[in-house]
Image 1: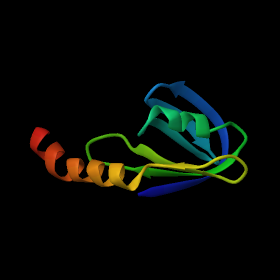
Image 2 (image 1 turned 30 degrees about the horizontal axis):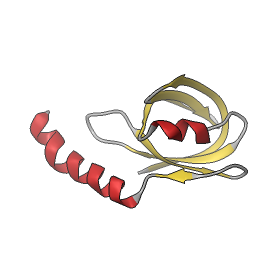
Image 3 (image 1 turned 120 degrees about the vertical axis):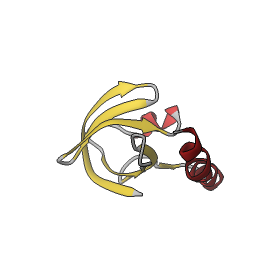
Length: 94
């Protein structure tokens, strides 16, 4: 799991894929684990974003911790289910 911290400078995209700039890092084509995560990422806010990356897919934002606004994280059950699917099902399909 990767942690990106800084001020959100730019947010582009919508739906399940987003491109944003956090501090000096440009995060291109990151997927959101759920569409409501986009509501927690606001321009000008200082945040820490948590992303889970699979070897064959783009990284997925699974948590947002904001200094001033609300924070959001993927539930533990959903995280475990996703991790098990990535470890068992994806290698078989790919």
